[in-house]
Length: 127
Image 1 (cartoon, rainbow, N blue to C red):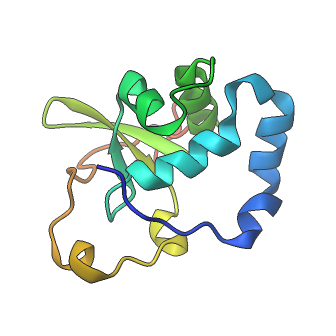
Image 2 (image 1 turned 135 degrees about the vertical axis):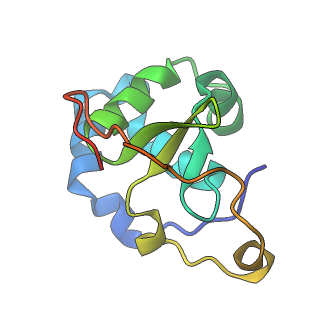
């Protein structure tokens, strides 16, 4: 279920996101990253299900969201991990930029937190 999130004005000055967008505008990394904020739970975790994410983020645009997720992961903006037999993604620095409040703050997280390594780059770097 999508959640209301805040995008700060500095988001549009994020040099790494701007560079990704300039390098690969066809995969729409800035829009995908903004959309991931709405899919993440209070810890920044989301199911790594590209087809579903595509439906929830940019369903009417013709592009491969898997490529955008891979680019965001390779850049270190998101990570990928496994828990309970499922694949998840996590937005790095999510809690630094999002203020969780209301009932979401009181409820448990929707997705399990990483218990082991989180892959954050194509070279196998971990968090």
